[in-house]
Length: 112
Image (cartoon, rainbow, N blue to C red; front, side, top):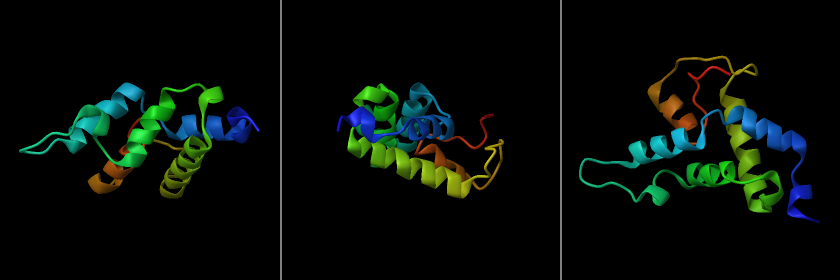
């Protein structure tokens, strides 16, 4: 089975709905979040592994998605859907909650 057949159009669409940050916004966020007072991560290593993987997925076409990518996509959809209301209306909340969602590419303050 080809990798493109492993992920459904539904998963592709759902992932791109919940990941509402552009690849540039996510890269900037991950770099900012990883920067410390004394050190700063190399840009391609900045942020948590899932966030970096989301960034890689955003740069791919559906036909280039691997099974590992699909697993991460399902996980990200699950994370966002369990922590947000179904309509994904902009919502303010605790900074740690927002930052956790932003680490996987979803800004809860960004309009749908």
